[in-house]
Length: 342
Image (cartoon, rainbow, N blue to C red; front, side):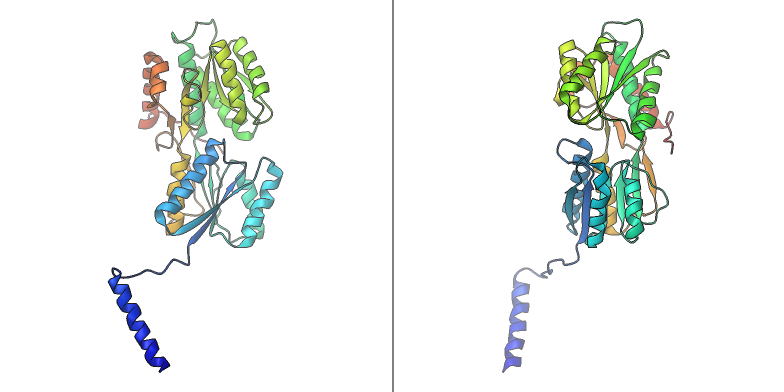
């Protein structure tokens, strides 16, 4: 009797399945598990917002993965322990993160958990069989910012000065800032005026807008018409000072024109969200090449200058826009490039 009922039940189940429109796939039980480690906080950080957006888009579009985002906070000393804890669970097929300092953290984690796989954006670590990295060519990015600052400073947009000077305002000093961004920004300035100089100031944190306004005021008062700011929450202080003195600000990594129309007049970008999406999809598909370290620049389409914003066209003189476009075309064609040094 029990066997008959079981057979009837199976038949009814099959009939129901077919009548419901064909094959019914069981819910997936083997989702590719991704942990995103943010070395800081997501909100207010364009880089980490792009990182999370790219990974979450990959998960949504493939529908074969799950993702959990873990914020590490601003205390860098705690980052390694947080990633160790993530690896120790064994829950993640892949840990994705982004920061030039993360390769050192990952190497330490792999010493204890050698089978954990990592995708690191905005960083470089070659020939590690468990790690894939993508570095964006910040030499080219910072050069473009400096070139644009010099074009503005020698244009009808500002009162002409006897000597070209532009500012670079940083939240803190770190190797990429000191060794890549600062000298490349200066190189961009000098591509327009060989005698141009950089006024480099450091806030000492990523949040003190009041102190940032004081320092930026000093920069504008001593001859900088344009300041590139990379200072987190301190950027708002630089904007306030520029507004008071009728000077200009440049943004980094993402479009910033809407932050202060007519004050923020230029923005370089890195397509970190696109890279995070593409490489995460490859990891889910099983085609990501671990041990590989890519460097992506202007010619690759991952670094550039945001020219298509209406506020850019409205507030920047056409002579400056045209000169910038000519430089971008040299990069895009491969006629001119700047190699990343390791």
